[in-house]
Image (cartoon, helix red, strand yellow):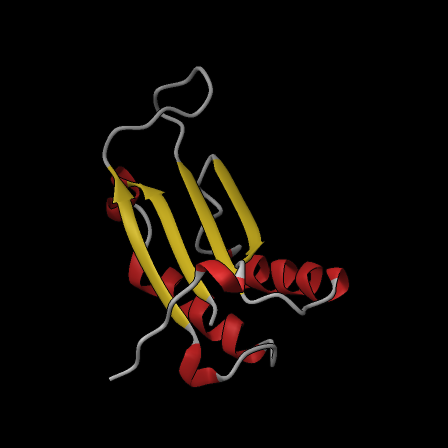
Length: 114
């Protein structure tokens, strides 16, 4: 844990390094010391059809972090800050950057390790 899913406007792959963004976020999650490094999972998906506001040229990055409960609001706020700092230079041309942290309901989560 956590599962970090990055959605981004697909045209951004020609403007920014998606790989660098994934690496920066992944490392920020590890460096937060809130999770075991081996449990951090980060992935990105380009969204082909999207709209941001009224300008068709607007782009977005949305970072969804699903974590097990137990972290304080202060820890979550610090995590958001560190993740944003890790990508601020990479995403400075993106119209909208949003992030969210969601606590997973343990009763509704299954993990199988082979």
